[in-house]
Length: 181
Image (tube, rainbow, N blue to C red):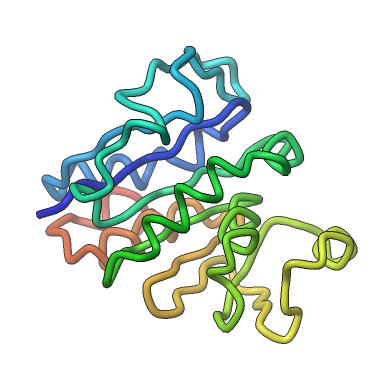
């Protein structure tokens, strides 16, 4: 079983990771947190995290998937070519799973991974158009979209996002922990 990388960057959305992380733990899936820097990283709710490794030192050969939380201000990552290069290196691995929620599908689009994929994103249509990275014909208004080895979701779909991640990784978990009956 490979390792799931959880990418962290300043102003990452903690709540969007909660169910995904719980399902990964419940399913016995090892994770590693990967920062864009070796400095402590503060999320949008002021939770400060020290990551296990960075995009510069992560062992890509050990990874089989990556989870990207949303970001309160995704524009802070617009110029981070090192992160884009890291994503592109991961994409060279066969059957690698990418799961991005809220604004973070931007990173997949910037890396060229959404070109022919159905996707959703927590970003207004005019902002998607302004960036020039998104094919609007492939946009879905669904909360969670899975197309091949890519899962995208809007922020309020964080529960279904986590469940879809667990299913895509074929983990043994109980989804009833996360939904009301």
